[in-house]
Image (cartoon, rainbow over all chains, first blue to last red; front, top):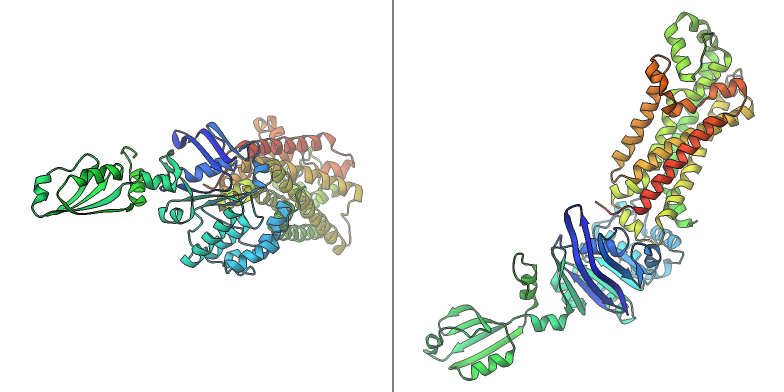
Length: 298
Length: 271
């Protein structure tokens, strides 16, 4: 079952486009990465999904409920961490857990205290006296303490140190393992790559990719190193169409493979090649291509 | 009703309510003492200083050309600009907390991320606001009673008439709050949400002041909320000002409901 489903979802701010014609499906229990550069429309999408903003066109549903009309029912089973988190300065962590628990009509204190221990947060400190990192931890605890069916995190690792980022990753994996769905928005490929099993990529409000990481790796170009036999590099002259020559250094070529490896092997067998090395699929290259503006998407 | 939302609203407004309520208590007590001490002087000077007489009449909404009666002097405590400013300040501060204040300080995302409908949030806020308004006005009445007691009670009004003044003052507070809720619902900035109703109450005050002086203003005096606030008539006649109460309450309820619809239907997020 798809927990999140959008169809031709468009949201405009006057003439400016926030997101356009987005069709997305997030399966239950997945760790779903939502990637895009700043201003790509990630936060707009989340705000439409949570019923803060009305779609201009198209439809969006969470748990099969319309995101605008069923907003309050949806949010009973959603934990949300905003990208630009601001908390009430007068409360401390313990008060926040009591207050949010009272609004949610459930006890958040037990789970909240366990999470606070895990994330090393002192719940007695008032928000106004907290550092950014501490506020971020409290925001995460408030989003997760009711063990929501869907967790929507908008750039959650901002302000967290690497140790806490690792703790968060471990916790999110455990949640996903227990059947919870994680919608993880970020502009950093590496953290999504470490955590998520499926990724959607957004650019200028449009969805340019929606695939598993393995599929994306298959789509991404591999680096190929060719060392020609002495004097053979000149003879070869031009690379075949599936190899994009990046660098020519005497008898050494560095290329990007734009086709299947079998084709390369077949071609290489008939060439005077001394050595051939095919690198791992490089997602970074792929993502930069997606992010780049004014270019054809791969 | 969601207890958590009520707790949050109470937690955020108790201090402001207490400060303004105590300030009103002190001002009302001082006014009661001062009016008792100087009532003979004011009554004696009134006929000789037309400007003073005019100012008092405008404040009280009194008609006719007779002298200043004890009822008129007693009513000054309820129409003086300082108590009115304190009560309106409370309405302006409280009613702009949600949504304009929440959007402005960036907490609206975390608030709307909770599983409550916007109408439920609106209702929780208004219930706490009404309770806070009753508290502030009640403290004002206590201040007036204490002042009268301290100056040995020459201007004390009977409890029934005091209750009528309280209801009339609360209706005025409710109407000012209605304007403010509407401005807040339509705004993303708290400053703007305060400026609009502030301009409105200032306009109301000026209109009530100009009406006896300037006939064009007199023709539109019914547009001023103060036109329906009549403590002098209540003290003098002891009759419920039903029409005035209905106008003020209907005005407040209509504006508050319009604000609720805007709040429930508009796009909301941190800007």
